[in-house]
Amino acid sequence: MLRRLLQLFIGLTLYGVSTAMFVRADLGADPWNVFHLGVANLVSMNIGVVIIAVGVMVLLAWIPLRQRPGFGTLSNVIMIGLAADVALVVIPGFESLMARSGLLVSAVILNALATSLYIGAGFGAGPRDGLMTGIHARTGWPVRRIRTAIEVSVLLIGWLLGGTVGVGTVLYALAIGPLIQICLPWFRHQPQSRIRPRNAPGARSSAGD
Image 1 (tube, one colour):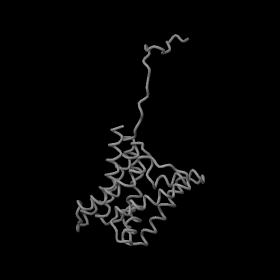
Image 2 (cartoon, helix red, strand yellow; image 1 turned 180 degrees about the vertical axis):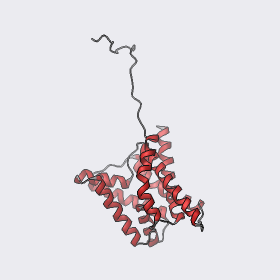
Image 3 (spheres, helix red, strand yellow; image 1 turned 60 degrees about the horizontal axis):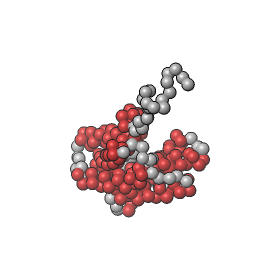
Image 4 (tube, one colour; image 1 turned 30 degrees about the vertical axis):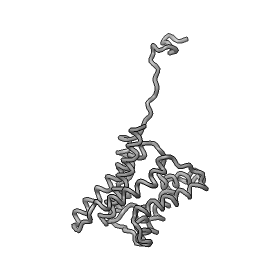
């Protein structure tokens, strides 16, 4: 349990750091962070505060879908936003396009590692992923179409609100799936099965009863 908790919190923290890296690279972000940046621009708030507020609003949308948040879901809502704001204080802005490009690529890779860490810990889906699975459970619509519709919607709204769309958005869309597919098996929690020794009392003999 301790190992899983550490994995969860490290994953959520690194996800927040990757969000800050997208912001500092300023070359485009993933759809949800384009939305967060757009809202932050509109209301003049830190992106971390916006991430937390949006997470709470998405959780409220779980209620009619009859979704139940897990410990990981609630941790996701709070920790990613806090980590993003702290990381933005630490990570400087860069003028060089080469430095920003390197930061962007690192952000995509770190995001995949972070996602694999917190999903692999097995403490429940994040609020945004839970929205997708909840709609699927209630409507029967294909998950792929639901996810595409949600992400295209938040991307367009975020862009209209002033969120940064660019090469990073395209890179994320193309790379995040394959990267998570590679990374997730490294961190997926697999409960140990309890195997009774053959000579233990009550075990079946090979001769059969």
